[in-house]
Length: 45
Image (cartoon, rainbow, N blue to C red; front, side, top):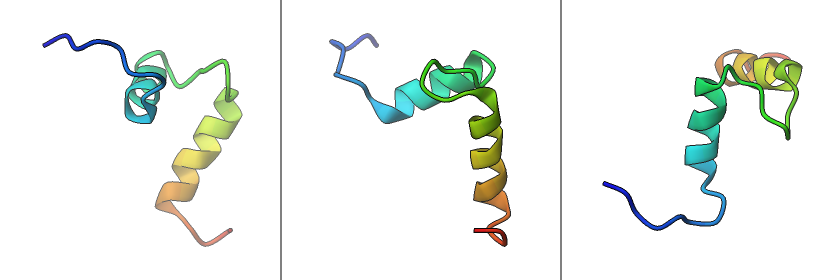
């Protein structure tokens, strides 16, 4: 199921970043970890 590429699909890029180990050129690993923590614990906004 290969479709023509859409310009920057957020879901695909997010899942790709996780598959790569959460290290994207846009966001350093620290930011990714903090975002994951924030999604589970929203006490410290």
